Length: 233
Image 1: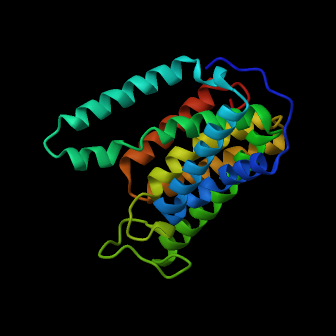
Image 2: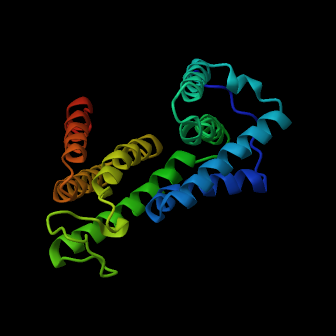
């Protein structure tokens, strides 16, 4: 996506509020779909309003928007032609909010100083807490709240309870976390050691979660990070 020149920093309350919603999104994902969908929708709504108010139409003129719009139109037409129209539309009709959320994140990255660093730190500490709780369950048979996976002793649920998605959560957010921290900070020897220790910490518990696809993605990411980065070599 072509970078759009940043406008003069506007430290409005709304912009700060939208940035904090983004920082809290990793934690909201742990609580369930309600808060995460709410935060996502609010960030998207914020961008929609501010893009109309400040005439930021240049954000809509890029290949990502065109491809997404075509894909959304395809899903909408397929839903209208399906056997159960109501059920199909229920799943895709509000899918457009992801477009405005993505553009909202892009806008915030352009206009909020240190957004990558702060979001990376938010992800880092949230992932660390989630992974630590999973280790606790792996060792003691239950997480810090006493939750277990009903009827299963070979799988970890952690803060997600009976939803066996903790491995997927870690495998999908850890690459984003490390990418933002590498982008936002200058790598030093100490930070490199912390980063590698964090990566191993997450790799091991992803394996312990019992989710094979999640462990495959984490292993693939680990090898790519090590072999494609001179500093990590």
